[in-house]
Each structure stands twice: as structure tokens, then as C-alpha cells.
Length: 154
Image 1 (cartoon, rainbow, N blue to C red):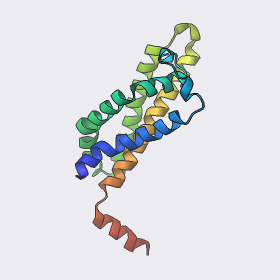
Image 2 (cartoon, rainbow, N blue to C red):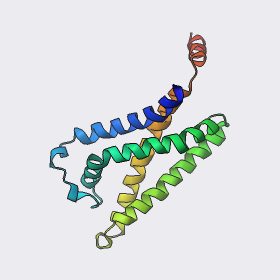
Image 3 (cartoon, rainbow, N blue to C red):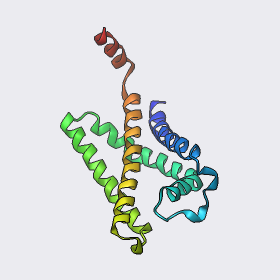
Image 4 (cartoon, helix red, strand yellow):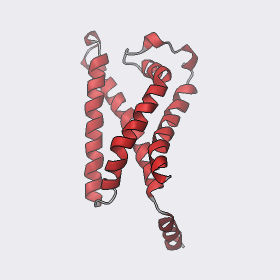
């Protein structure tokens, strides 16, 4: 049951946070499918709104095949190992963000727009992964660890 929760719950929480942000924005009902790919916040929100089921499916598969096995290995490493793992994750997010940004970048808008979109995309990804790791951390604690933490705090 815990393994199933590790696969389903972190993507669900991460996507729920972004869904709430998109759904309760002032532009939600004016989002159109033809706005995707413009490299703006509104186009990102449109992309998210129309492709949410596909994105969630990919997130669950990624969680099952990559994230949970890596999490189980990194969790038992030293603090330095975990920090290096997080920095590698940030670098991977930056690489993917640069790739996605390059694909949707219109060269006439200039390099500054490309950099802005790249930073935004990296921020969205890193935000998602931080939420994901926090949920995994909560799910990875054993009940005996929680009892020990309560006793130590008294």
C-alpha cells in the first residue's frame, strides 16, 4: 500500500497545487488551445489546462519507473549525497527547461525572452519536484520514526 501511495500521491499533490493555481486564476475561462507555445504564463496555463490528463499519466509513470527507485537509494545516503542528488535534479530540470524553451522560442522575440521562459520553466519543474520530495519524505517515515520524534520533542 505504501508503494502505491509513493507512486500516486506525490504527483497528485504536485498537480493539485498547480491545478488550483491555474483554475483559480483570473484568466482561466479565457484560455484557448491556440495560445499554447507562445512562451507566456498564459500559454503555459493553457497547455496545462488542456493536457492535464496526459501530463498526470506521464508523471505517474515517471514516479513508478524512475523516481521511487532513485528515492529509495538516495534516501539512505549521507547529507552530502542527498545535496548532490538535489543539485543533479536541478541541473536536469534546467536542461529540460532549456530544451522546451528553445522549442517554443520565437527568435524574433530575442534572447532575453528565451532566458525568461527558460527560468520560468525550470522554476515550475523545481517547484514540482520539491513538492514531490516533501510528500515522499512524509510517506517514507515509518510509524516508529514518528513515535521516536514525538518522544524526542518532549
